[in-house]
Image (cartoon, rainbow over all chains, first blue to last red; front, side, top):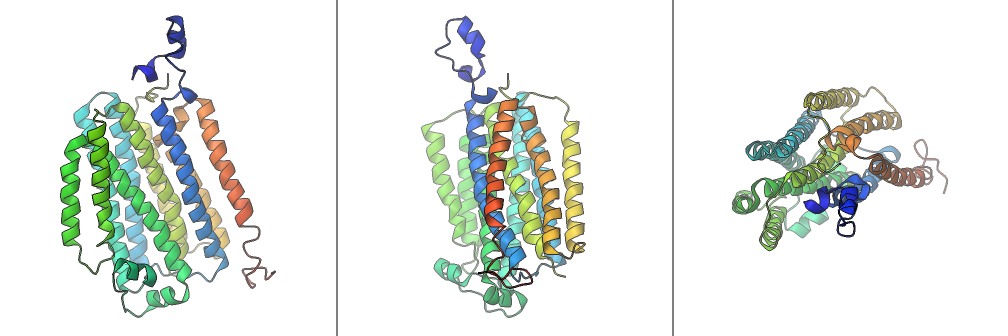
Length: 272
Length: 108
């Protein structure tokens, strides 16, 4: 970390000015890189959220979400907010050099993130079984669209923008949360996380029935396993406080985005 | 040095921020579930203001931007905000033009 921690003026005074570049914005390069990535990713979500807002205001937008969905989404929000707190405590522990506590807080953050994914997956499954579906996308996945009749089926038929916007926005966010949990797992457990991820992937692939919409997307975990293995074996390293802080930036961003998705997607579509 | 953001050893403020975020979420749920504002545009504006307050708390405290150097703070905040303002200026003024009244203006 010498390149990141040695002050530029000290380096110049010792005749090493050319070797030690002054840090950009007073922060180490990994952190600046993550901030720039998050700024660009925020524009991706920003475009989706603006499109959703436009649809919500200017079209005859359905308001199907009842008490159960709102309670579920509120619990999901509480999970993400709590995960941000445990992440901050993990960063503190890493800065104090306490590895055991760091690992524990990161594990707590991952648990909250996993709870969010599971709750969201259950919500999706319930909505799909009640008729809210993307017939074209489901056919492409090899899943038979449900034949349920009722409010959600009518919405899918008459206001396809709703299902496209709902599934598009929430799927994009769920993917980010999944990547975040895997990222934290790699930072916390390094190579030990690979067999854990492998077991979760294989178990999920066998346990999720073929008719479920997550049956094929769960193989994202397999792709993540390969990517993580390449990273960990090509550049093995001991992740330090900097890495924990940078992974925390990503995790808080995932939380931040949900702070806009929750009111827009759920609260603006509550059943009147 | 802003190597690792060792800005404040007191963890209490993070619990306060977490509590504030939960309270703001509760207010949002109450407003949304009870449909306090009947006009969707008004409801959207109020919910977005609350969401912006929540996101500011997350960025400032949890993401530690409050404790970074001023140049980094302003570079990030100004550039991202400018992009959103541009999106807002392009999306919304003409968004309702081709839709029939009462929501749209009905202008082709």
